[in-house]
Image (cartoon, rainbow over all chains, first blue to last red; front, side, top):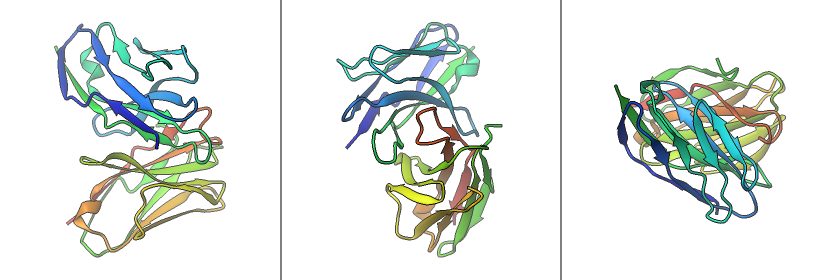
Amino acid sequence: GNSVTQMEGPVTLSEEAFLTINCTYTATGYPSLFWYVQYPGEGLQLLLKATKADDKGSNKGFEATYRKETTSFHLEKGSVQVSDSAVYFCALREQGGSEKLVFGKGMKLTVNP
Amino acid sequence: DSGVTQTPKHLITATGQRVTLRCSPRSGDLSVYWYQQSLDQGLQFLIQYYNGEERAKGNILERFSAQQFPDLHSELNLSSLELGDSALYFCASSVGTGTYGYTFGSGTRLTVV
């Protein structure tokens, strides 16, 4: 079946550090790919998405590029802030049937001032 | 406020009991998805309804059931509760089948004691 594998952490960075969270997927066809963020005590919020190969999603300084050849969707940010402390989930949207989201296990990021 | 409303926010109950979690989707959304988030299993898809009809089932136990009503709100019923059912239960909604994205509620935290 479809699956998502991502770095699990936890990871602690200093403010203004560079962030990369690796995400790879296994799926049939060409799924849409997403990054969701969960702040403490809150639900999941869509951070960015990409629907086809070579698409780049971007939002709030975060970027991720849909790489079909490596089945990857790595999340990057050039300079993290304390407010970026959260849990980050990579997910794919299955094609056909329910089109439900399949999530990775999530990675907790803490950014220290 | 994401537009998806889940009640209650917190629920503490004893083993063997039955509870009902409620979800009101974002206005105009026809699909409702239920997910369970636990520390060991991560985010697991439970079930999806589309316009009142069950569309897909995931890792939902037989002790669990759900329905979507004519006004499109959904309820997840959990019975014969066990300690291992303690988790965060999320509801998400989408217009159709997620092409334009999913909106998550803030979740119901269930604690079984």
